[in-house]
Image (cartoon, rainbow, N blue to C red; front, side, top):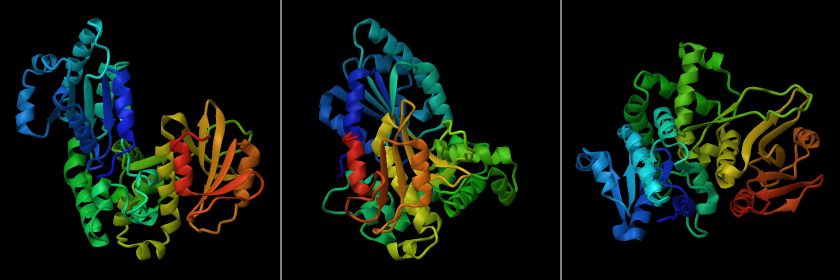
Length: 393
């Protein structure tokens, strides 16, 4: 079993905050991570799964039951099924704070939803930390076992990645997609037609990494532009799509202002496009954009909250696939290419001249690192992810 990097971050936040909200899509490994923490604490932790009727009955009188668990970490899985708990948790946390018990009371798990985040923010502001468990990335792969290419093709959902064959992996992902459309979309957004959301999901896959044109999507779907915005908000909120914002600094140049859209998990992207193997992916026009999205997800996940991601495109021809900022300073400018023998594009050079980043990298599909001149370093994805994880910048 892979031990996720976020495991240590959850323990660290529980040391500081009364509660931690752990968000992520279904089947990404939240429950496995939480159960691991429960096992470590043995009788000092309690796990509740609100999809189980027996556990839901235990919180019929939630205030009394949870107050009786003083001194134990209470893990509440599928917290979005009991939104009324947030106000109760606030009262318990505040009372325990007053008694000097300041941290480590609750670990709340849920598939991200607008209502969940709104209620948690309103009721538990300043009382909980938020963490996102994303797909497995290259730094979490064991040195022996699944390769970076396998991770790219199958995606980072654990069951998909460790399946016995590509065929089994595809079967799992198809069922995952269907379950989201049949179960989760109606649950989280009952007013949005699941079939239309599914069609939009597929259209985003075909346009992986392209600028968002909401009007064109609306025309293709036969709905209004505001409706498309709501559908995209849902997919972003469920951590299934990424809306990468354009860089918003002042260059005194005309900047592209539309965000770029990505299906976040490369395995789901390939399943939406009916691509089952590495051969299928490499032979499809989406190979380049798919690799770009895969690299972006790996790097954004490794960077955590320390760095703010964006991209740059100007009418002058500057183009940077991924920018990381901190405190208003551009720390990283990153170009992404699938080939293992890449060259730096003119647009990337122009962008680096404009932004003057502290670090400039070209992430490629090979394994080596070498200088490319002009302050740009070619680097393998796995190596740059490791640097970000270890804060070597």
